[in-house]
Amino acid sequence: MTVLEKIIQRAQASPKRIVLTEGEDARILQAAARLSTDKVADVTVVGNLDKVNATASDLGLSLGGVSVIDPSTSDLRESLAQLLQALRAKKGMTEEKAYELAGQPLWFANLLVKAGHQDGVVSGAVHTTGDVVRAAIQVIGVDKAFKMISSFFLMVLDQPHYPRQGSLVFSDCGLVIDPSAEQLAEIASAAANSYQAINDDPAKVAMLSFSTHGSASHPDVDKVIEATRLVKATRPELSIDGEVQLDAAIVPVIAASKIQNSEVKGEANVLVFPSLEAGNIAYKLVERFAGATAIGPLLQGLAQPANDLSRGCSADDVYYVAAVTVVQAQA
Image (cartoon, rainbow, N blue to C red; front, side, top):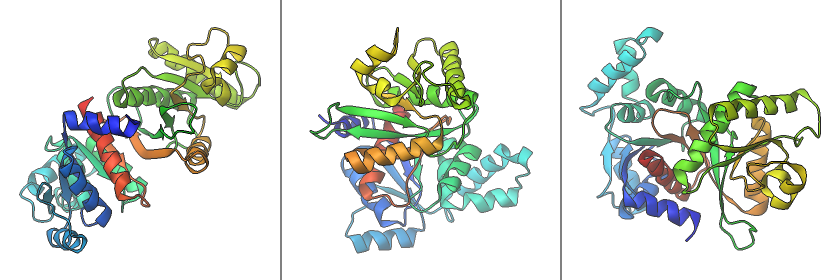
């Protein structure tokens, strides 16, 4: 069974309520119908009711198992506006502004999750990452265990030519441009949680650098060393190596030759990159040259599941991100 099949099977075992923000988009509706038919999630789409129905009709889709909510006319708009005003009152949120925002699909969908009407939200097929993240932070909020949110990609390696089968978490590849040592430690801890929420095996974390255990000296290396120290201090149960080069992180024989007393032993399944630049380049290289499936960017560090899509996503991308969101909600 492939990684993606396992994710779908886990989601089907206990489907959760997932709201898809951009219900007027054809890709969203195609994914919603499939999620409902496959019993992966209890799906709600948000959008203008007439436009949603017209798009579904043009596509020949049946939305019989999908709930459709128009924020502008929903009976929930008033109560969700009151919730938003209460959440943001100290930031100057007025009742009028809250009511206006609660009528917008992105804010309405996140408020549904915050209020407990939904278990997770998926957005980003139309909205920018900045808009998606802003709404998630301001409505759903940051998990009490963290001070910030970050992102990860689930890299699926399931083709016959891969020497190693399974999945890896790459973080952060989408949000935090130049993390401090403290931020990098938070990213590593959140990424370990993300891996373990999706997979059945323990996280093995590699704090990546261009140096392995002192082979180079530079302030950028020092940052990774300090981040590794911080993770070990707060999460002593985690298997973690740092600072390490990529080959020592994923090739056991190289790890054995380069790292004394390695905890990961060249079997890292969570790769933490020292900067957004490195992480973004890395995931696209693996996706484009190796043909890996990249699911994400997925958000981590939030109090409840909220995930982002690329605006260039396919209906398949929406389907799998929603399935991952179900698994996160289960955890």
